[in-house]
Image 1 (cartoon, rainbow, N blue to C red):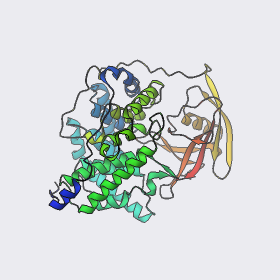
Image 2 (cartoon, rainbow, N blue to C red):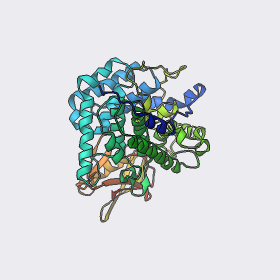
Image 3 (cartoon, rainbow, N blue to C red):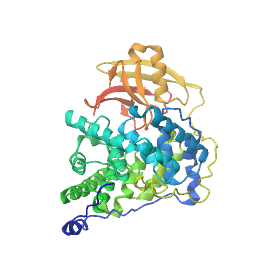
Image 4 (cartoon, rainbow, N blue to C red):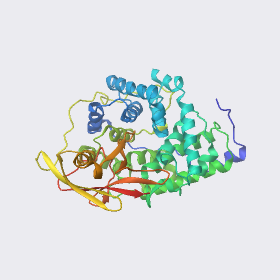
Length: 434
């Protein structure tokens, strides 16, 4: 247990001038819970294969919003137990942070896994390895800043050890790791706001020792990141893209004193997300799980291992198991797309796949056609599968290289396992730097 350290009086006076970050929240009304059923159906009906990570996101979401589906929770926890007991050395720092958040979201018997398997100590080590890699490789972490933010958030919420000074040094809003090229990453910035808000609260409460400049800088960072998030707001209310909006909402919920009321119309964003749900946008369990907490007015800062697990109001938890119907144009049973791999030159093929296929299906079919040109490898993560290599050329965090997914030359906001392809589409995987 860390020794309590109270800030001197001058510090308390100074920081009383900094926004208190009380939450300003809009959420789905009880009469509109039925509009969330597609998300619940996606989570209920999905296959959770042993060793995959979507179960962690789904369990965390269910715990936060209070959905009492014991059969599903039992299945998810069994998958997480398998990972903890058999695969822990293979999971990334951010995935381990999510496991801790999911198991300890509220008081329950399974939180003992956190302590029986020393998960917080292991996360401290993985986080330190991320920092060491940054120091050795031009500021590039082993994973990415989204995962680093999850690390800090979990360590903060579960009283782990981390250096406040290093957080201040590495989480400056202008750090290159918030960007892909020149594009600010909304979900990365949002997760950083949640992490920094937790650290700030710990400093103000005297749970962590620091000097006054660190606390002042963290408050400045939050304000700057919130401004960047809001600058990505679209006319229809989405922030960044459909899939980053849920986490952006969480960040804005806990930072409402850092922006003016007319800077963000929360209800407009909420209504647009509900429309996206009705159109089948969140068709993977991870996507459904990531957006649900914000729609119910919850954030990752509501994780509290000492609080009782809540139950959702009304009949929300009694979700149906009716399949989600998504209308797709045309009625043909198969479609044809043009698929390309671009490194220094472009290799293309016409690929036929069943209607309703995702990008990954196209890549797998192309690989069967010509393994030399279209051969690839992938890994599962808490955010779904991602491409690690094509033609034996590996993505590298140290070199800031990755395989970019595009349609018609435009980068996709969905992952390889969730983007549904369309007849006649021009799909591309491109060797890129960020």
